Image (tube, rainbow, N blue to C red; front, top):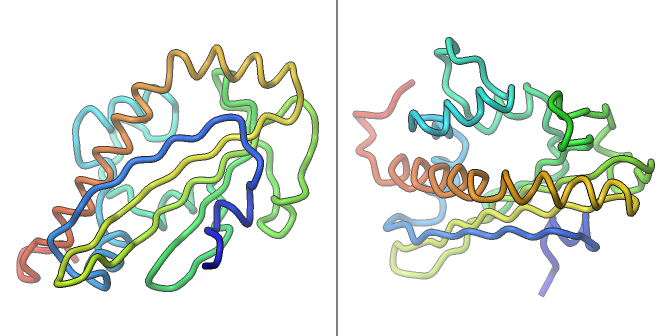
Length: 186
């Protein structure tokens, strides 16, 4: 079996967070929903993202996968209909996030001390008879001992909220995948 995009882009990591949900819809419907769902539909997700500076409270547009990329995440790779990988480099423990601009083709080899790399994937796994597992995985690799210490302190505070956001995002995709076509936003 071929490895995942996370394996391709960040095989070594310090932190792993994985969440999954079963969706009562076929894989193609879940894949399509992944690309149109509003990840910040829940008020608490909007509030948490605003606190982190990833979303202004007054923003009215939907936070979709494409908007994440437009907002600074790198689209590292995609296996059409199955998996997509996003990436980010920075000093996440800093109030500004300390983002570092890196080209997607340079992400894998980036190794500048003082930073951490994140790979965030979504995978669609058909389970048969119209049921699909949607999985999100986040991997973080700190590029030196000092950044590892700083990130771990940051992660002690952020981890529960990050998990809450991931659960809300999965739920948004699941609802979108099972929503009747006539009620979907355009």
